[in-house]
Image 1 (tube, rainbow, N blue to C red):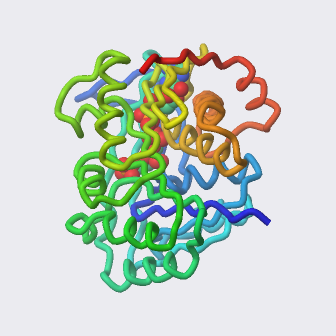
Image 2: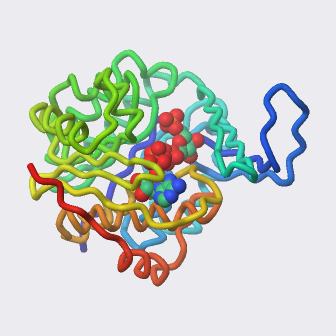
Length: 316
Ligand SMILES: Nc1ncnc2c1ncn2[C@@H]1O[C@H](COP(=O)(O)OP(=O)(O)O)[C@@H](O)[C@H]1O
Ligand SMILES: O=P(O)(O)OC[C@H]1O[C@](O)(COP(=O)(O)O)[C@@H](O)[C@@H]1O
């Protein structure tokens, strides 16, 4: 029985997606529809992994007053629910999808402050569950109460337990996590997040290659940079590649990055190499772009996308 993938989401969200014909700031905007679903980075990754058939345990911190949407998602997909419940409600993040431009505008709110005891309980649970060689993903921003110490205690714990650590976060949380010196198997910033981290623009593949070299020197095994409509870049111990985007008219870009992380993890969990992992990442993300919410289409659709992906090797 393969070890399940652990996803750890300290700051989940209910995503409220509001569809508009066009977004006019400062005016009255009349929506054509709205939908709410359980989300947040590690939750979305768990959801895609479960759709693909990979075993997954969701850890994190859920507000006890509106946990039902998450519980329903976990039950529907057979995701093991190991989330701590904290006082209050999980935050709601607003996603505005404008039909005319195809752009999505994200308004992400802060969740309730996390009591120290809930974070300690989460760390204790991770200590008991994580096994040598097991894939564990820490994902998303950090809620009020956790921003000072950041991801460091969690990453140190996972490293002590011998887990293979993937991290998908941004801003100060990413900077702090890299500074704590724990070796990471995978990070997946988007281009903007990596530019913010390094404080310089990274417009070309050469710039991305150079940036990845610096991250490898800091103990990051593989760096995947999602490039939106330009595809995705990977620098790994097996080589560096640029994956061309597949032609798609996105229904919403929310969760595309999370689907990409799920594809990367699904492939590595199945014993595939990094090159195949990049292909799975792009296929999952492309499939996700075609739909709202946290679900992937059936495996047959993903497999068809996998056949269409082209990778170009980037010389070192
Ligand atoms: N407009 C698009 N056309 C084709 N592929 C896209 C498009 N937008 C995103 N993707 C795919 O989805 C992946 C993740 O999207 P991206 O927006 O970069 O992630 P994030 O949500 O983390 O910012 C990209 O690497 C790419 O493969
Ligand atoms: O953890 P953060 O950075 O606050 O972001 C949370 C938001 O990101 C999402 O996980 C989507 O992320 P991606 O579009 O990068 O895949 C939403 O479900 C959620 O509202």
